[in-house]
Image (cartoon, rainbow, N blue to C red; front, side, top):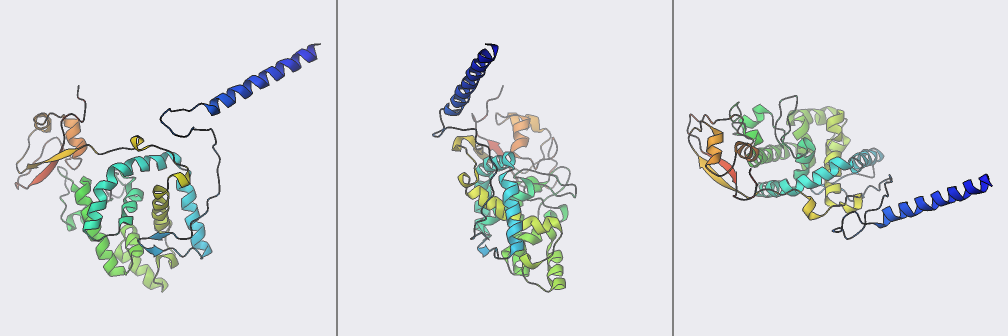
Length: 308
C-alpha cells in the first residue's frame, strides 16, 4: 500500500514539474518580443563562411591553418555572449561617429572593427601607455597633431583620434601594400611588420609567423565583423531600443582658460559629470589654455538628461 501511495506521489510530482516547465517555456518573458524566449542554451560547432574578407581582401581559408585560426576566433567571440551583446550596444552608439570619418579619409569601413578589438569601443587604458578607442601611444598622438598632457589628452577625443588612426593606416597601406598588412601594422608597427616580411621572405600577413597577439589580430577583427554584421546567425537577440544611443549635443567654442569646470557646466544647464562624460579629453577640473587654442566642447542638449 505504501509503495502504491509513493508511486502516485511520484507521478503527481512528475506531472506538476512537467506542467511547470511547460508553462515557463510557453510564457513570453517580454510582451514586446515577437518571438518567445525559450531556455535552449546549447553549444554548436560553427561553420566558417567561405567568403570572409577584410576590406575586400579575401582570407585564404583553403589553408587548414588559416581555417583553424578563423574558427577559433569565431567560437571565442560568439560564445563570449556578454561581451558580444555589449559590443552590439556600443556599436550602435559609436559607429555613426567613426564611419563618416573613415569614409572622408578613404579608409575602408571595415576598420571600424579594429577599434572594437583595440578597446571594446571604450576609452581604454593599456599598461604600455596607449589610450582611447584607438589605443594611441603618446608619441604617435603628438606626431599627428594631438595635444597630450596632464591637462588635455586628445587621444580621448573620438573624432580627433579616429582621424589620427586614419592617417596612420593610410601611411601603413602605402608602405606595406595591403589593408590587411596595414591593420597588422597598427598592432605591431610598420617597422615590425616590414622586418618580419623581409626576414621570412613572404608578402602576406597570412604567411607570417607572428607573436600570438599579432597573429590573432586580423582573425579577431574579421570575427567581430562577421558576428556584428549577422547577429541572428550567431544567436544574438535584441531590439533596437535595447541598444545605446548618443546624446544629442552641440559644440561650444572655447579659446580661453576655464578656471572651474563645475561653474562652467552650470552655464549650460548641466553638471560637472556630464561635461566630463562628453569631453573625456579634458583631464583635470580646469583648462589651462595659455596658448589661447581653440577647443570645441560637446554640450548635451537641454532635456536629454534628468538632473536632480
